[in-house]
Amino acid sequence: MEVILTDRVDLKEGKLNFIDQFFLPLINDKRDLPFIYLSLKITFIVIPSAVLLFTITNLHWAWYVAYLLILLIVFLGPYVLMLHNVCHRKFFKKKFNYLNRYIPWVLGIFFGQTPETYFYHHVTMHHPENNEPDDLSSTMKYNRDSSRAFIVYLISFYFTGVLNLILYFKNKARNKYALRIMVGELFFTMLCVALCFANFKATLTVFILPLVFIRFAMMAGNWAQHAFIDPAKPESIYGNSITCINTIYNKKCFNDGYHIGHHLRPYMHWTEMPANFIENLPTYKKNNAIVFKGLDYFQIWFLLMIKNYKKLATSFVQLGEPQTTDAIIAFLKSRTRKFE
Image 1 (cartoon, rainbow, N blue to C red):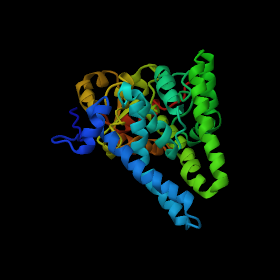
Image 2 (spheres, helix red, strand yellow; image 1 turned 45 degrees about the horizontal axis):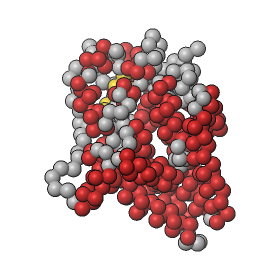
Image 3 (cartoon, rainbow, N blue to C red; image 1 turned 180 degrees about the horizontal axis):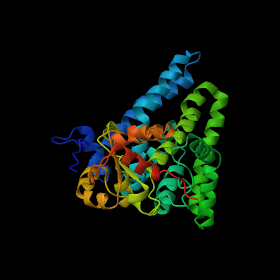
Image 4 (cartoon, rainbow, N blue to C red; image 1 turned 90 degrees about the vertical axis):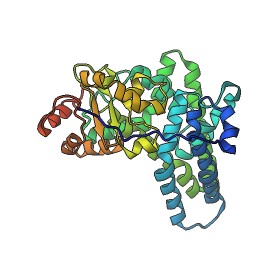
C-alpha cells in the first residue's frame, strides 16, 4: 500500500533576520532555529505571566485558569518535545555549553519539569532498556487497554518513579547521575516550598499543577508509544513501538510521532524523520510495524482506555495486503496483552 505523508517540515529559508544572525553562530544546527523562537516566546510570555501571578494580589481565579490553559494548550507540547530534542542533540555549541542549561533548568520548571530528571530517565535509562523489563517505565507487565492498569502504572510513577530512577543508577554504579537527579528534584521541591509561603495560589498554579499534569501526560504518552507489543519479538523496536503519521501533533511537536524511527536512531534530527520513514517502509512492513494515521499518542491512549478498537482500526495504516476491520482489531488486541 502506498503511504502518502502530509507531515511537512517548514524551515525558514531565504534572508536571515537579526535574530537568526545573532543565534546561528551559537547553535549546532541551523535546522533547530525554531527552538530559539519557541524559547523566546516562553521567556517573554510565560515567565512574565507567572511573575504577575505572584506579584499582583487579589487576582480573580479566572486569571489563574487562563494562565494554565495557555500554558498547557499552547506551549506544553512544543516545549516538552523541544526539551526531548535538545536532550538527544546538544542545542548550543560546546563553547556556549552553559546555555544548554537554560531550557531544562530555567524554562523547564514552569512546565513542571524538574531539572535533570527527564534527561536521565529518557536518554540514559529508557532508550538503552527499550521498554523491556529493566525499563522503569516499561508497559510489558500491564494490560495496555485497561484503565485500571494505567492508574496503577501512573500512581507507581508518581510516588516511586524518581526514587526508582535514583536507585537504578546507584545499582549501576552511576552515582554521578543519581546525584544530579537528586539535586534537580531538591531544587524544584525547595523552590516550591519557599514560594508557597509567599503566594500559595500562584505556586500551585505555576509549579505544582504543571508538575502533576506533565507527569500524567508523559506516562500516558509513553503508554501509547509502547502499547502494542509483539509477543513473539518484544525486544524488537518495530515490535514494541508505534509510529503516528499525518497529525497536527507532528507539525506542532517536531515530528514526535515517528517513534519507531526515533528508537532506531535516537540522534536522528527531527526534520529527517518523515523521509526516513518513507525510505524504510519495506522494513516496517516486513516487521509488522504498527502505524496510525491522523491520531496522536494521547488520542491513542484515550481510545485504549475506552477500548475503542474500531476507531484504532480505521486509523491503522495497512502496509501489507488489505485486511478487514475485524482482522485488524484482532491483531491490535493481540498486541496489548500483558506479559506474564
